[in-house]
Amino acid sequence: MMRKVTTQYADVQHALLTDAWLDDVRALETAIREFGAPPGHENGCHVSIFEMAGDPHLHVNVTHTHQTKPVRGWAGPGVSAAGFIHNRTFASASTDSILHAIRAMVLAPRV
Image 1 (cartoon, rainbow, N blue to C red):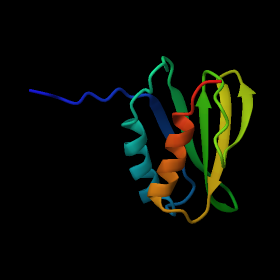
Image 2 (cartoon, rainbow, N blue to C red; image 1 turned 180 degrees about the vertical axis):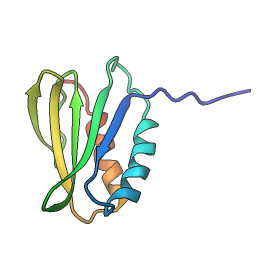
Image 3 (cartoon, helix red, strand yellow; image 1 turned 30 degrees about the vertical axis):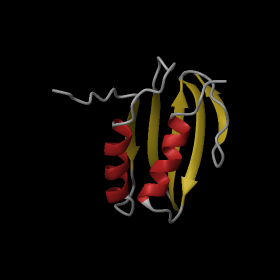
Image 4 (spheres, rainbow, N blue to C red; image 1 turned 45 degrees about the vertical axis):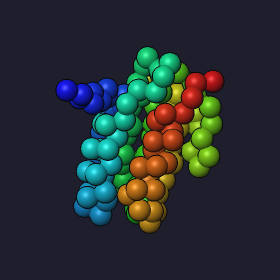
């Protein structure tokens, strides 16, 4: 009997001010938690999804404990005690395209 085992590579949290993105964020969180660790990546990353007052965009930060190669569309890295932070905003993209962008950053290769 074969069984697929998924290793959680990214932890995710959200801080929403409205319900405008709630359904999208719930779907994103579920999918992000299913990302498996890419080969050679021992340490995971943290994904933070949030809204800011007066801004209708969905904001996403991805923090890696190690430096990664740049990913198109993402700003950063910023450096903090938690690691290397990349960020991006989304306006009216589909949940699938947002997930695709987050996956690219989460699974970005190391420098």
